[in-house]
Image (cartoon, rainbow, N blue to C red; front, top):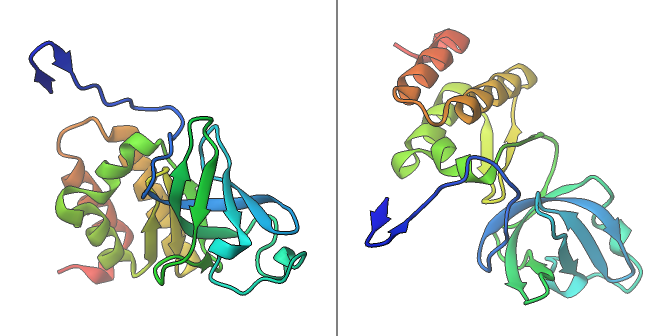
Length: 185
């Protein structure tokens, strides 16, 4: 899209740049006595202080609530000039994710997975009967029957690879109908 002398360019790949207010899916990759450090699919780690967690965490007891490799939904609380990213989980919609499978895609393709007014992701959920959460950082958490989770992951891979093409919604619908034949008609 162009305006005057400017052209908006949507990158098809690259690392996620965090912004305050973004909901992301993070993976614990380190912890201290009062913080967890998260991989948020960005060059900058996300830091969750115990006071921003949904739990009353005693000093030194962070491992009691989240362990290395655990996934959560969190919100970017702030990003300062030196790119220190503070996270929060102080909202009912933010939580530790139990089970499930995480798929990473380029963050720029998240809108394509969501679709217009949520149409693409709703179609995927309807056919698969899986729970699907999408982070602005390009992380997607899928939970449900293992076979269905794998089919959803494949649908997301198709969207990732073909996001720039026309007729993608129809191709995804065809894929879902052939993958979940008992759910259409």
